[in-house]
Length: 403
Image (tube, rainbow, N blue to C red; front, side, top):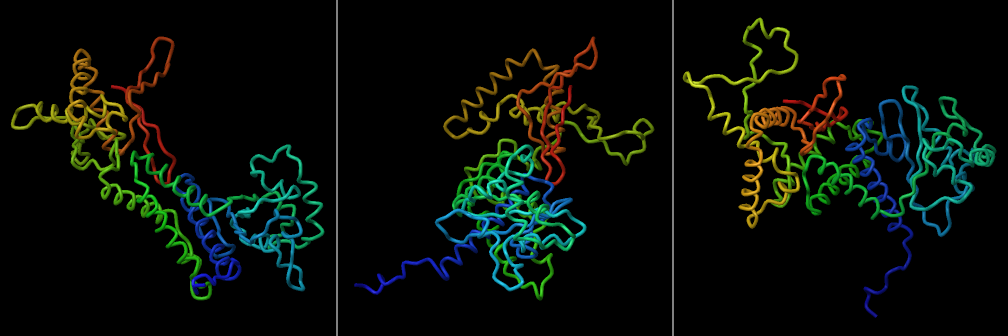
């Protein structure tokens, strides 16, 4: 028998420990990528107070990651098991003790690959869905004799039950898929379609940084060193996405965010010019003027020509342009332009306004959308420019305009 065959068949020791640490690092990466969806999540801390701390605007969610192997589901006994003589080092005791910051409300989470048994099932219900649900009274009755201590802020086991959600994610593979989904959805919201290898490269970079932060000593570092702030992560993420999309010739950007080479059809009015007519102007003014005593018709025509494809072609038609169908797309655009020939008086201002909103806000237009607003009994306003402006930190915006 080869010496290569003499491997221990148990995963105890180092193998099991590494599986647990890797699961926890992936969990931190998943919660970090939730920043791409939840703008109230301000930063993620690794091994500061609990295994993972999620700091929101008004509360902190303290997460314990439990990856202990067992063929059975989690029980009350396992949850309340203590080791020291003081009987205060159980999972619940450690979780409740995190409630020590008077500036934030404390919420708790237990994340595990294993399911819970029927006695703990109440904790599996999300906090916002517990109204009229059974299980709280029985769970409180079971836990109260075992957890009599209170947090530093005076909260007891009843508070812990009311503010704890038990989340089950069965494996690291599922965590990876959830992270990749967050990366993919965020990129696609800006019409960037990354290849799988680029999504996984971003995932690996996130895990590497978080693993490094979690390993930093609490003795010689401060909590900021072990935290990933929203503003830093968002900037880094979009730089990575932009780099990946440039590297990948197959990445699709239907409505690109880089518009440096495309000009406004009209010029932006310079507020530095003193003009009594515009002193009280709110917003921006765009106009066109003369050059060498001739009106700039050629400049306007070129600008309209550059922006017409975004107005006349759908996202699907823009996204699949390639060498074999390029002429077909040109012919389609010409056909659409011919059909709109009679509508030129309305099409030109529509394209002009489209270009202003796109370039000024890096917006994502909603193709062929019209918003009808009944302002009064005699008049209906039709907004023929409808755009979504995606913001990193503030809520996304709906921009509408009529021309």
